[in-house]
Length: 234
Image 1 (cartoon, rainbow, N blue to C red):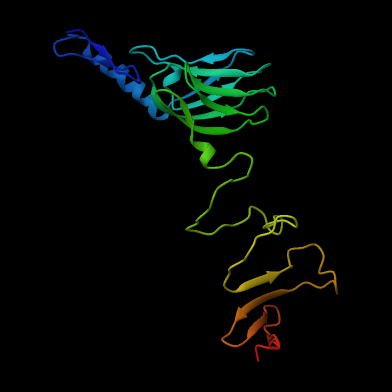
Image 2: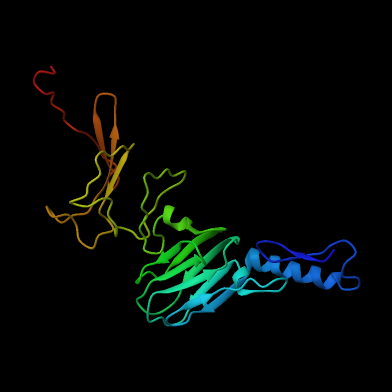
């Protein structure tokens, strides 16, 4: 019985009794193809108007078998990067093209994932054999610094990338409620002090059983906020 070829990576599947004296060569090539699929990298130059069709040749190294692809070149129209139908594979792809046009990574007959004309970022993709699925779409727009999600649950700290630089919410897009333990307030990182007396401070608000306390972290003095009950709640 003759050798056959695997469906996705086009490995040579050797049959019993075949390739006497050359089976090692076939095996080594298969291992190199697996290496491509696990961690291989290739920069793929796109045609300015048509893009590129990635290859999956039987039993040899091919650019479509790489795990990481960097799409390059100057494009002058919307282009496609195409892999054959029936291939099941994952990809990490960077759109490093120049030119303000869309790039779509797709199968020959199915749908794909599209970078917008101004998106020169990264996508995590997989082919299910029919279409290309964009996993990055469910993770948010990482390259633009914006995460769009129905909810975020963190198991660690969420820290801004610079001190006293970024906002939580906006004047026309406020958070509904803020749930927090102790509240720490400081304007010491600002170039100027507050608008009232120009000074800078560092305070912590803490909750007591019957009172709310403010601690001056500079002077170490402690204060109790005066609370007046609302008439009717007395």
